[in-house]
Image (cartoon, rainbow, N blue to C red; front, top):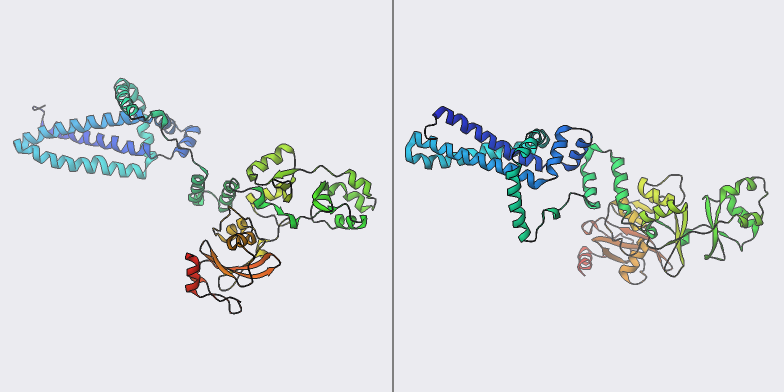
Length: 444
């Protein structure tokens, strides 16, 4: 090597540095490829993506191949540079070449190619995959030996190559992906996807129609009253009971009664003969599971019961679909959310106590706790451990809440501010709390 002509040595050195940069950059490119986009491209027949995906299925082999080539090239480049330096500067050339070669490799074989690979991973990664696929077959015995030694050393520390973390995403990671999709996914489609992901966190008692709002038919009422209710019913299915909803007999479907109602031929005997068996849903059932249950049982409506068998509310398949696509304007099952939330000029919100905390968080992008009570009234009662008086002020999750209307044992209306910094009690409030008192309440 000492007799190597200077010109050839320089050309060889430049080539080796460029080759080192290729190894370094291609490693970064292949490892930073978007795996989901890669699989999609490979599925659609992109040859570069197919080869890259095959290489990444065995990352230990790929890394062994790249590092084998990179280290061989770097060592050979160092040897040639040393000989070249000694030919030019003599013994002191060793010190000179050490500093210069380190700087050159750092810039042109590491930082520059890896930066480019980070910016254009597919372009470099797919190109490299075409080269590495046959190269891996050519040097497979050497790579096999290297990987065997490494795997045995890892096994000594209790680490198996087969136990590597996979790249599957959980629901929260999927949510982040959807948020970061930006203009690639229309905003409405993003909301639909996020709503679907939210379903796994919700149970039927969070979206059901509460018992006190369930409209039904009492068989003990006069027949004329029943006919009047059927004629003016806002729903297509109604529960039928005797005296109390807990003594439910079943459901009646109005479409079977319409023709008789129009001709005034509906009789009580025919009505009772067409009562269908009630379908019950255990309280706390996940919404996703209940959707499957509705599908399997061929049902569209059910009564939610607690552990004692008492009816807590009513849920329909439309309620579940609304959680995904939003409220249907023609569906009278729920009150209009904008009737339950009124945004004031000062930025505070007047909220009905019956509103679902889940709906409140969704409409105003708040984070009130949903693990316990399902309504604002229930949240207030749980927080205070008693029935509050009008004007009571307190803080939940950093949001000042002032009770403005109480009827019986129920908080009918509350005033909520976005944050403690913006809170200022109204002039006609029965309880005036200064900011200092509110902050003390926050830390109490």
